[in-house]
Amino acid sequence: MSRKLLEVENLQAFYDLSHVLQGVSISVMEGTVLSVLGRNGAGKTTLLNSIMAVLKKREGRILYAGKEIQSLPAYKIASLGIAYVPETRGIFPSLTVKENLEIAARKSVGTTNRETWNLDRVYQLFPQLKDRAQNGGAQLSGGEQQMLSIARALMTNPDLLILDEPTEGLAPRIVQEIESFLTELKKEGLTMLLVEQNLSFATSLADQIAVLGKGQIKWVGSPQQFMKEMEIQHTWLGV
Amino acid sequence: MYSDPTFLVIQTLNGLQLAMLLFLLSVGLSVVFGLMNIVNLAHGTLYMFGAYFGIWVYNLTESFWAALALAPLGVMLLGMFFYEILIKKLRNAPPLQQVLVTFGLIFVGLDAVRMSWGNLATSIPKPEIFSGSVLIFGEIYPSYRLFIIGLGILVMLVLYFCLERTRVGSIIRAGVDDREMVSCLGINVDLAFFGVFCIGCYLAGLSGVVAGAVFPVEPGMDMSVLILTLIVVVVGGLGSLKGAVVGSLMIGLAETYGQVFIPEYASVTIYALMAIILLKRPGGLFPARAVQ
Image (cartoon, helix red, strand yellow):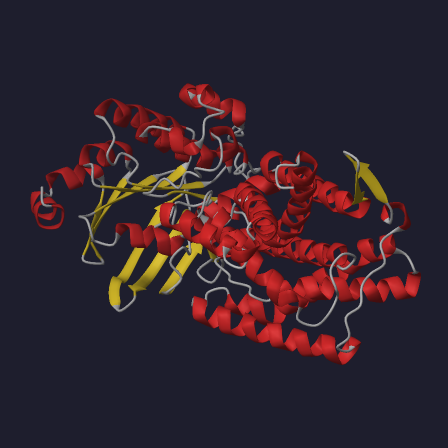
């Protein structure tokens, strides 16, 4: 009995004078993973920033669990059970790894009976972070920063995890590690909205693919269908 | 005389006393700057109100300690009032607007003080226990100055503990790093900022009461101290406790030593120091955020 956890309807977003998102509609079913693919500049990060109200200049409707959230401030949106792993990873350099995690700790607001994320459980999933607990956030490698950013998002015990290019700039071995973490999370039933440029990563994780090009959704379908759509891949992703 | 170690100790204590007053004033200003990019030039006005509220409470209660306990709270309430009617709306305004509005508040504050308490200089009597002197290496030294130094160190330690060892402290440090990311974790940064703003106002009021027993309390007492405070903030670097500590120690001591050892250059000592530091480190000594 799946329901739409996140719905974006006719979203328009602006940076200064440029009209970055031109009527984007997507929806993410509870317990599934939606991957949004697109080239650089297609508006992927803008879409996520608009959902999180990091970008405030936007129009359209955004619904979470059936409730409109587009007029809420970012902290209220997050506290409904949405966690964000931004492209920049957003690690706080002034805080230690442990403080980065602790600052986010929150009880689940959802009705799911998933196991609660706490410091111990996060350290189990990412043992590297435990070794680095007292290190400053600025002293981590790119891969470790990405893990910390995901781990920190989990500490909020979210029902929806939003990830912006989690594999960007990482070594293949780390990409594999992150893929296996996220697959585990998916098995637990965590809903995810993932923005990616890495096609194999995105398609292996996703239940649904949406292709974003020039600020509009150009195609939506299953990963299997997507693999056959050579023209879509060529035109909008340059594959 | 200059080589006399006792003289040096006495002057260092004087410098520390000034440094502690500057610290109480600059720490709130610096963290508010760093956390929300708000330039509040009226911070000195809060200091002046601290002193006048102190006198007011003293006249009612005849107790320095009552003044010390209550006047900073009054200043905090005043700060909260201005936050609600003005500062809140300036949060996303360009710096020039912030500067103009808060600069205007300085004049409003000045006239409000003149109308309420007149133009004459007055002062807060020192508490009995610190009204005497102590002997330091055979020199007589007013014990109240040692009280100021002790109070400053106490506040430093309390702030350090709160900032480094508590969750709220983590939120404030994280907010200075990346305010939006903190919001995206479901934390109300604006509320944390408001708290920091209130504490900044409280400390400005506290330094006003404390200073009111050593310096004349008069309209305009805020201007000279505002300039020194801004220099401390700039030299120390925006947004960090460490910057405020080191900046106030440097400026407090440089100002004092300058007046004693090179009186002919005293008026430029701290400005020269500031210029040298900013040439080497444009963001100040310990900015919380890297300079863009």
